[in-house]
Image (tube, rainbow, N blue to C red; front, side, top):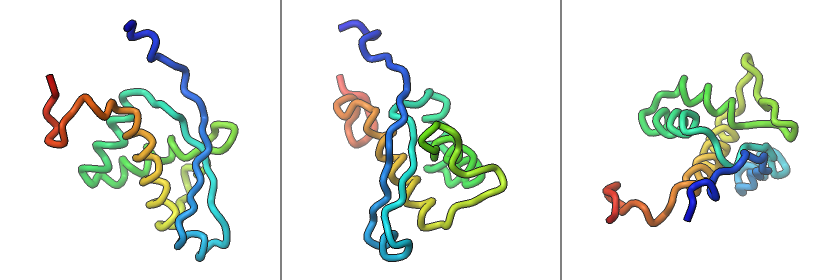
Length: 114
């Protein structure tokens, strides 16, 4: 199979934060957009900052990933989200980006399979 078949132009997808606690607090689900695929640099920036507790770096990359329907950042440079919304958005983005990995290429130990 030719690798070019897997290349695609990123598309904006709608993300709905509908956790019970968020709906109870804010009265309805919260919506934002992100890309279905991202560059390798953005991908590793997100996961490295998340796993290494580099919160300033995570804040910067998440502002690149939490978007409006037109693809512009939903959170401006001088703005922040409430922590419960930010944490839920980070989880959702992580779930989406994690699904872009092949689930059969690595064991749970992180070792490459033959």
